[in-house]
Amino acid sequence: MAKTLNLYEAKTHLSRLVDEAAAGEEIVIAKAGVPRARLVPFTTKKRPRRPGGSKGRIRISADFDAPLPADMLAAFSGGGKR
Image (cartoon, rainbow, N blue to C red; front, top):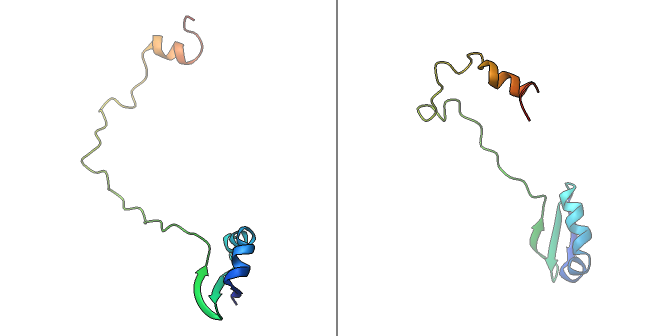
């Protein structure tokens, strides 16, 4: 159930109310007893991933997973010159 506060009280305790809303509580702010606004947690809508979204935009070389040349392999494994 939502917590209802008048506008003056909401202004006075806004920081605490924001923390409560972020924790999942719904807060209704009323003016002269009439509900005017609702404070709820902020959420972002995540679009579901679609496989193949980059199809045709990425090219992988045929030798992508070929072994590295000896000098480069030595540099990565600490055997290169410093």
